[in-house]
Length: 351
Image 1 (cartoon, one colour):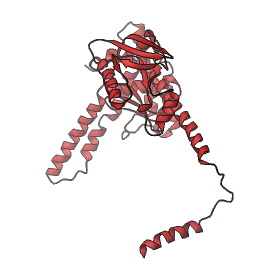
Image 2 (tube, one colour):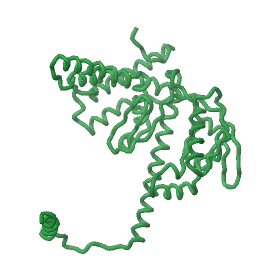
Image 3 (tube, rainbow, N blue to C red):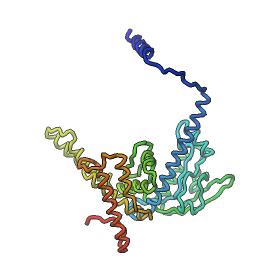
Image 4 (cartoon, one colour):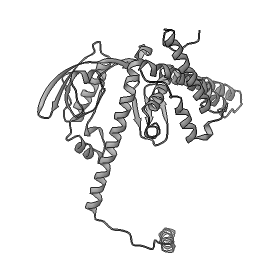
């Protein structure tokens, strides 16, 4: 009986609810499918545009900062590609239409980068890399991508590409160049955020939309690169572990700390790590030949968007936007002074 009451109550509720006053517009399934196809194409093109911009801004920084990451250098073609097999479900057919087939399509080439100098063009189809064919199944794709990954740490920078351009088959020899091995990748979140995980630099779509100026985006990328290069992720994990050990020691003696020491360890030096990442970021940008004038204004823009971040707070994980603006401005003064005095353009480290 109870099972019969529930659907009755749901039906009664729907009948009692206030309804719209107009008739809903109708359309057939074919029209809906066609519109969904159009919107998927627009979405995928925008996604690829975000990735192209992210590569355009990040690549010069990763290349210039290779002098600061001797233990994490990799060889790079200075190019990226994608295929329909990289996507799932209905997006496969959308990608196949945009790429005009299932082959691996070049979607980005760094200006004056190795692939550009060798003659690779956007929309070229990559048939093989170092004689490993892309093929037409998952197993072949995996071997192909594995060879690209292997070439990044190989003893030789030389890479061989076989491409198809229109109806022509072309062989290219590419002398790869060294960059920092912390790739910038696009995060799906719409939140205005960026973070480092010790292996990558993740920039969300929300941040891409907020940082409309490439100089602002470069600052964000260089900042996250600073977290990786300065070992902040490992240091935070160490601090958290130390706090956890104190919590366990207290628990062994009958005291429930409710994780207070672990939380304190996780937050230890958090603002200092952020300030350090801001500091070294300016040196990475300078090494890449990027202009520094006006770059601190990013934090004024952020303050206008998030006024609560203007004032200082010892409990906050990040310095206030006002503090970051001043610190960046003074770092630029420091760099300009070193340039004027012909001093080494490297961050000042503690003795």
